Image (cartoon, rainbow, N blue to C red):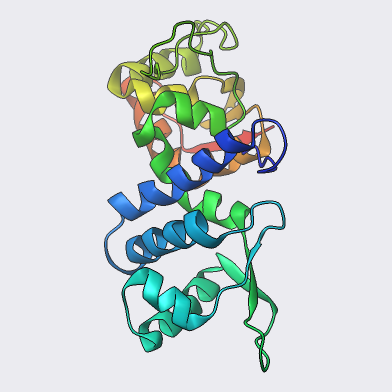
Length: 229
């Protein structure tokens, strides 16, 4: 995951990416997390100091912004702190509201399961892949295309399983599996190499069963999958 500063050249694009990740959670996650993601995205849009990485807004103003009671605003801020999405930098005092920091890295880590649903271009950009820029004046943002940074799939056990993954879910494949390479297959243990620690961690945590299933469908049963950088 490429954590970039939301100031200086390209800052607007970074802000949109962060808010898109939050709003994807808001749209797709029901219950508490979805509600908090929506409210935090509104607070960031209206009152967040992107350069300083903080917001200093009183609970009364936050309650008015969210359309809730102050008691509800206080509860939701506490839940945001519990999730690790925000943290108090300077507590409130007489005549001064509390200053909070927003943990962008934590928010992106919690939202990454939703990136492929936004589009292959978004998921690729957030994982640090090169994304082709639009070549026309159209306001339509193209999905990720093959830009040459993904090598052809090898004719090895992983390459055959990868073709199955690509046919099964092209967006998921492009976002997470396309740049994995096989290092070793021995005694039922498949070792894959990822381009970054973030990709290795995410695939290991969330997508390992999908790899095992694809390997089995390709005719090669493996008992375990290790992903390294």
